[in-house]
Length: 170
Image 1: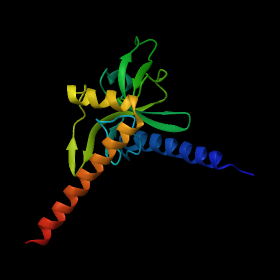
Image 2: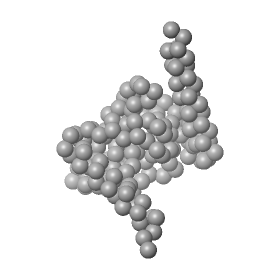
Image 3: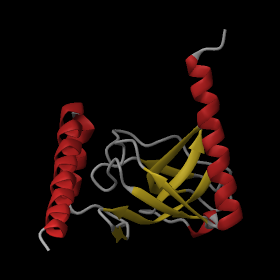
């Protein structure tokens, strides 16, 4: 009998391989965000434009895509080790602790733009004070994360209905 975890693991592994191949062949990739680990800088539903770049071009503050344990992660670079070691330490803005070091072979690319509400946003290399406060709150409370995501969803729904109303009233 095949477990659902095994099927899901195979599906995730396939997505990682496909993302790697697309980045290798075309140099860019678009991915839709589903997780909360980068709140508030990256929201569920955002589309990320990722570019393949050499690992030595990655620096602290960059938001990067990497594959690990048959999954894809998008987290911020918090430190870089010496070039001969080539390890990158990342952390989701809303995560309490850094990730284990990312090896050069696991690094897939850097987020060059965040597409949200039809606008291209260049990712900031650091969070503003208000964003750091929200990230700290979300780190400590799943309820806070749900509130942030819910408010964001309500704002998107409100904007979409406003756009539709504007189009109808012509």
